[in-house]
Image 1 (tube, rainbow, N blue to C red):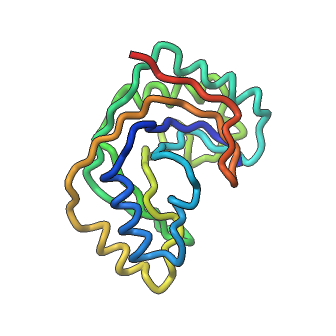
Image 2: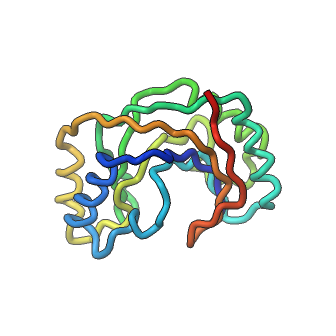
Length: 173
């Protein structure tokens, strides 16, 4: 798998506390901590694409400043296995840069769930909820959470698994 993410490089203790809690309650092993990768949002995902095309996509982030997002609820992707994720409050600049990224790379090879107009910004906290814990995970997602703030200050072109950076750029103030 290949893709483009924005990532938070500063410590994110409240995020990791939610990841640890979700993992301990709903997974056999910690899917997100196991990645060894910082909190992130995947903006584009491909089964196959020329890595040079991904690197070219990073141009969408020229003159983009770090983005501070507030996450205020847990949601569910009802797929197999069920996925728990944090939903950010609306952030127009994030949607704009997402659209620019796909305009540069092209939409023809991308995962349709990540295309403009369809993509739901999300920061995953558990990607391997056990089948017998789905109902409990859905109830967990209905509970209110204390809003948490993350600042995304880097953009990466990646390949995974395992996570390997192809190229990275810092977002500047």
